[in-house]
Image 1: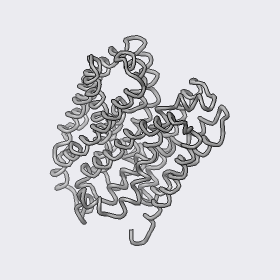
Image 2: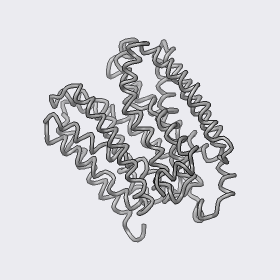
Image 3: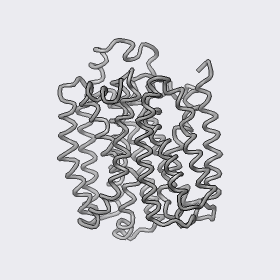
Length: 403
């Protein structure tokens, strides 16, 4: 089945996935960083104090996600996705009206939880659950919302901040979510059977899970989980730190802001191309066969970033980073479904998303701490490459006969 055939046969879910992935960008670090100078000035914060608030909000959102995310396995998707959309709108509106540090923390908590956390969780869990033979393509289509947001939202965000101010921009975002995402999710799901238990009863055993029913405790006791966990978390961990301190990196390398901004267009393009390319590979060879090689492009990109300082280096680095990120969404989510089934996929994904968010909360603190103590990007990049290489070797254990 081609992508065109997939979209024609499943038009509602084929749009639902990327829609929620796109709106999850309002809670992503790259978008929130646009407002960093204005928030620091408005609340008289330092870089360190804002980083602490941001990390605390992210960590709190991660812990909440582990509890809330499992309910996608129990309740109708129509109701669950509506609550996610309303929560994201509420967080955006709160950000526009925040007048204290505590309100800022709550707004950031909401944006991280409902945006990066639950909106993306809803999109990927839905596509992994409701598609089996074309799961790779379904996840690839769903993931397109992420690079689309990365390509257009920074420019749009900068424009609206200049036009409406940072508060007016968040007010506009909240209204946009209420008038676009909230009604669209209901229209798209329409008459589809989206209650997980009722849907499962209509499927054959092979289409759901005929074997063991996994829970979080069982997954944590499974040796395979620890072979793949480092490779799963490393990419978002490292890129969060590198992206948040990208201007420090640019100064270190002697690159202008314009060069870095242009390179991110290539990052987004690479994500789209590789997301669409990897879907058929997952459907043909399985996610467990593709996963061990997921970090190879990122490893190559970081090696080039460490080794070279020329003007085109950020383009190559972000090209390779985009390859790993583009393939990662489809491969990782398909892998969880292959290894642990879809009956409790929401609970398992929310646990993994919590680990991921904890990593993205720790990353800014760790990178800032290292840089403040004179440990430069040269040493950081070498250490990152060593850790990536070790993670790849661990992930190769998926090829073992007993796995």
